[in-house]
Length: 368
Image (cartoon, rainbow, N blue to C red; front, side):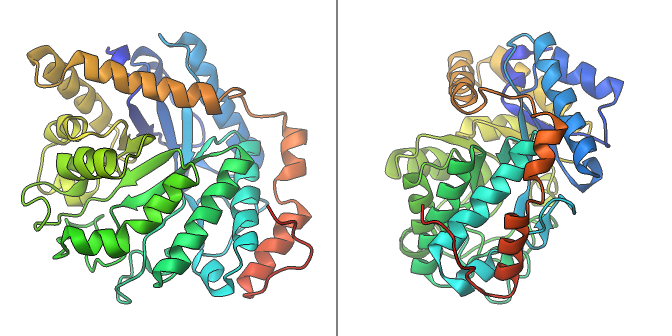
């Protein structure tokens, strides 16, 4: 049991409700966040009840802090919630329409529905520029292939999520738009240098930072011309030197799923957990492997005991996590179901989604 380190960790769960073992693990280890997938969601009442159950555990945890409850909801292929939730089109449609007001409302209304169900964090927007048209992993998850277009809509998406009250997360830093390989299967290696990243891939992240995005999610990609040893998720050059020092990013840094084969084919679970924090990550994301979070906790605990990781650094990360929770999770429990159902699948949301799917700007949208 390590309550200090647990706040730095997100874990996936197995089904529509928490198991006794999952509850015990979350409580005893003071786990900071849970991530939901298709396997965890059915209809609105079930999602709301699950989120209420997750949040109720904080009262038994050492820190009594609300939990992050995150989900991947980008629209299009990456869409965990099904009708009667509004089904949103892929963000490539927003790029084609090219109306930032439409984009703002897309994110704001999506965020409102997530919050109504008790989900407080969306792992979105994806601000990758589709510089490689053969990139099937990103594809229509990208707003487009034009830098200025992606910058403009990255900013509008973040502002929409912020306005809804949901925690937003720009991904996949420093940019996943040029890859051929899927990092779920192996580690992509990119031949780009820092000058190229600064000119093309990184500017949309800067726009997201200016729009007050809460988190940035790292990419499991190795750029040998910038860091010959480590992929971005495990790289001090990317996280401390570029993200913190050069870009002056002050929000939280979360890893992409540490169970992806891009990392597990090359490193042990234990090494990845310790190295990610050493490199500058604040939050460790574990989506699918139930045995990974306990092994990671033990490894980080051991690294602190041996002095490889400094306890003061872990405490300062925890303080930053608390800061965001205090600011954004003032009312962590989901609203009553009857109130939630007035927001989920609202006719205005359905109309907006249908218009975007057709490539149209609906009339009557209020500017920000």
